Amino acid sequence: MSGVINSILNDYDLEKKEVLEVCQIGKFVEIIDAEIQIIDKPKPPSPDFIINYDGQKIGLEHTQIYSADRSRYLKIKTLLGNAEQKFKKKYKDENLIASISFKNDQFDYKQKDKPKLAEKIADYVHWTKNRIEFKLPNFITEITTTKHDQVSFWFDEENWNTAEYLSKERLHAEILKKEPKIQEYKNSDQNLSEYWLVLMIGSLSSVSYKLNESENYKMDSEFNRVYLMADFDASIIRIK
Image (cartoon, rainbow, N blue to C red):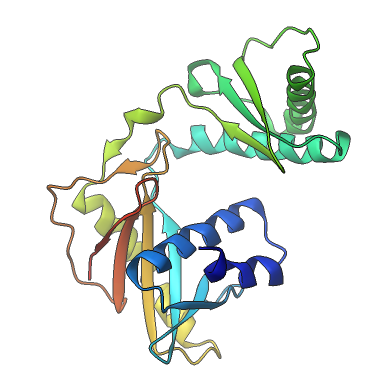
């Protein structure tokens, strides 16, 4: 996959979320057709990616489908993202993966408290890694660290496997939400031949969805092609 995505990763200064998107689309491209080339990752109002396929420039939109409970999950993910950045600045010589579990898989906090909380979590991870004795706060149940070549903080959900199966109705609603973007893309100067949509589920979190293999997900769309991909096991279904 590195040959598919390296040019994008090397040419752009991407945030962690965007790097994950590039990796997901790299995996998608390798599975459906290794001849596809990812040639650009432009800014809005262009599609998320521009790909070259069979001599044509194609706009590819990428999105993750979450359940209604996503705010609880994303609030912790955002806090850990801030803690990761604090750790990188404060402990520059330490690289690791930190898995952090929260009590009942949730933690509510005020936005004004986020910087201080993020710094505390960075310290907790440093102390855990260096076996410095301390007491965890009551909202964190466990921290484990593993040596790595970079720094990464992960929300380790206890109930990650409680995700629901994706319904056809929920999928349809997400496609309809994305279709108005097509006109925006047509108004851009990218001169694209087609527009594809890749919808991601199955990211090993309680707010993602599982693929229901007995469901017929096929439906029409204004996109030229629509794909549904389960990220963890790399299963791909062409919806249109």
